[in-house]
Structure formats: structure tokens, C-alpha cells
Length: 151
Image (cartoon, rainbow, N blue to C red):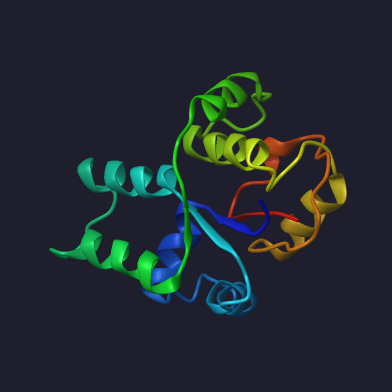
């Protein structure tokens, strides 16, 4: 699988048209030629944030978000045992469980491998997006902040 696996903030910003999403990331997400993947983990994190009061949304928000997934033609990524097994062996460089699971999913689905520093450095510089083959990232836990990317 290749494409862009969006993290929770990126999903939220793209859906809401938030200015925190870079123009470049917005264009790539909107381009029908690009495979955009949204994990159920990002949706789950949004539900938890709503439940504990960290994210307040209007009635019907979640239905509109799900409809946006459909209308955008985004691929959905469910949670599998193999993702959980990969999560367990990731180094603890980053402790956010949702980001760690996105990394594990990306690695297991071939969107992200496990050891290429240039991708990490580029992601930090742009702070929103990287689109290049990502083979062998030495420290994959550092890669997820705004968008996980692939080949």
C-alpha cells in the first residue's frame, strides 16, 4: 500500500479547513490522484477527545466527518492484530498511544518502513507533510506528528 496516512490533527484540520494545515498538505489531500488513508485510530481518538471534553463539536459533527471520508474517496484502515503486535515492539521514543498505533499501522501496511533519517528531518522542517519513499526509518516513533506518509 502507498499513500498518505493522516494523523488525527491532520484529519481534523483538513475536514474543518483549518489554517494549521499547510496549503501543500491540503492540495495533496484534495488531489484525487493521491491515495489518502484514514485510520479508525484517528477517528477513535476524536471520539475520546469529545468524551473527555477536550474537543467540543456540534450535533451531527461525527456524521458529517464520516460523510466527508466517503465523499473524499479516502481509504479507511481498520485496526488489526498485526498492528497491535507491531505497536508492542516499537521503541518508546514517543509515548502518545494514538501516534504510536498510527506508526505501527503504517509500518505493517507498507506505508512506512523502519529506518530513514532524511524523511524524519524533512518532516520536522515542513512540520506538516512528506511525500517520498520511506524505507527504513531508524526512529519511526518520531515520524508521526502531522502526517504519516508512504511510498
